[in-house]
Image (cartoon, rainbow, N blue to C red; front, side, top):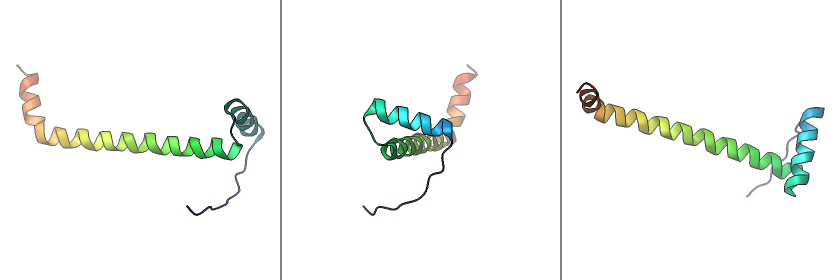
Length: 71
């Protein structure tokens, strides 16, 4: 894995939240940010996959589902 660096500008509210999370979780602030970003990415990707699967199912079974709903 290649490490890359960038500057994260924070305000007092974010700095306090990061410090608290780092202390309570026993992690560095960098690791708190890393985990938060990866968690959000995973949840976002999951929602996209569910939406795509739902659309595909509706395309394939929509007519049947409509008929079942009208019985």
